[in-house]
Amino acid sequence: MTEHVGFIGLGNMGQPMASNLIEAGYTLKVYNRTPEKAEPLVKRGAKLVSHPQEVAEPGGIVITMLSNDEVVADIVSEETGMLPRLGSGGIHVSMSTLAPATAHQLAEHHQQHGVTYIAAPVFGPPEAAAARKLWIYLSGSQAAKERVQPLMEALGQGVFDFGEEVGAANVVKLAGNFLLGAAIEAMAEAFAFAEKNGIERTKIADTIAHTLFACPAYERYGKLIAQHNHETAYLKLFLGLKDNDLVLQTAAASKTPMPIASMLHDRFISAIAKGRADLDWTALSLGASEDAGLSIKGGE
Image (cartoon, rainbow, N blue to C red):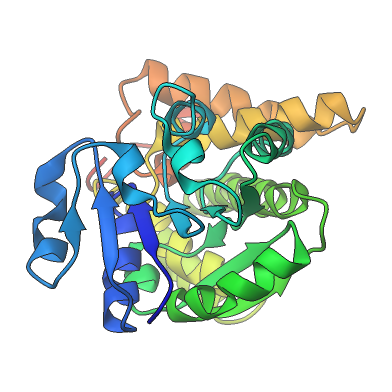
């Protein structure tokens, strides 16, 4: 591969994604605040660097998979020097879940250095990332999207283009996460309702997931919610709150009432107050069982 590719952020999602790029034949420079997480990639040929600036090659491509808006802004701040090094013709592909407003701010900042910013948030858990089964949403410059298309195809099972408005893909990602949060709450209430009326919650979860709502969200999350199994954090609950807050901020800016999102905010705050911030975000569902006076069996 002739592209110079840098990858920043080697967490639960970033590490398998970077691994798939190596598998596809790309030579990577990688950076992570915890260098030890890069060791499996280094063994496969990636070059670990000690500073964000060093992942960039002039005119190359840098992919980031980071936890929030602030971390992404820090990585591309003037202090890191990454954007001047990337320079004219360079592309930054941000695959994090960010606010659309942040995407606009970042795009303007990148333009000052001749760098094109693309939003490319994803749907899918870490095992989907490992299996190249992510769904990827793109928005930004058409020419830049065409250039990064082969990389996106190496990372996912499908790429959806939402045009040149750079924050568009982030709007879609936030809408999707809102729907998932609402589904978690809906299942939590439905399963508590069933349990209070003598129905085994795992049985109704299995039935619903194979009939009315035969889809990945209800199949995957329904089982975790029914079993009160939230120890393995695919998306930590505090990050779910972050995404829900981005939904509410974007809704307020566009004058869009979202009463369910407001209710979810309170569920998230309650769960965090009870010490569940680092559990999977399906632990949001425990509130419905507690409100119904049900004992919570299984792991939290």
